[in-house]
Length: 165
Image 1 (tube, rainbow, N blue to C red):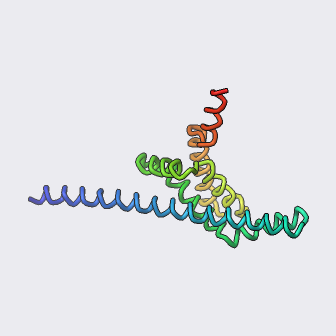
Image 2: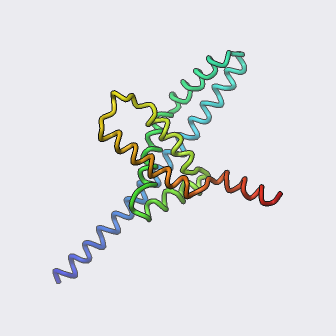
Image 3: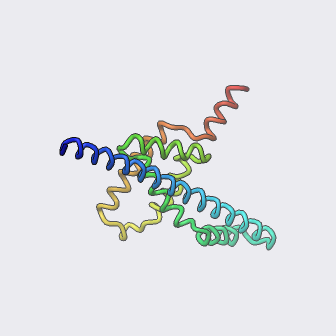
């Protein structure tokens, strides 16, 4: 009885873990969609305001940057760093769920990595300890491997258009 009960508990724990992983990924993907849309809308609105006020290019760029930050660009970068870690996980099922979810939502790992890399670039050399530097370097290498392996949705469309011509 004890052996069967412990196997049942193990199966139950693994099932719960799978459900948690799926829920966590869905939450991160939803956060990415929400913040990406808000940041994009803020950038478009700032560009319209700059055009209406006929600002010079430097002021327009500053207005766009501030609008992106106010709309949640920093949070979007943090979410995308988390998505990059999930996309490079050793767990194949999790990695596939992340990449497939991005593809279904019209995003790619290229988009996610661009935001995550902006966040990583913003670290000051003196503010990052050796462990964090090593972790971000490893993340970058793992993401680059995936980026070489997979093409973006836009690239696939361009390839298909080029084949038709």
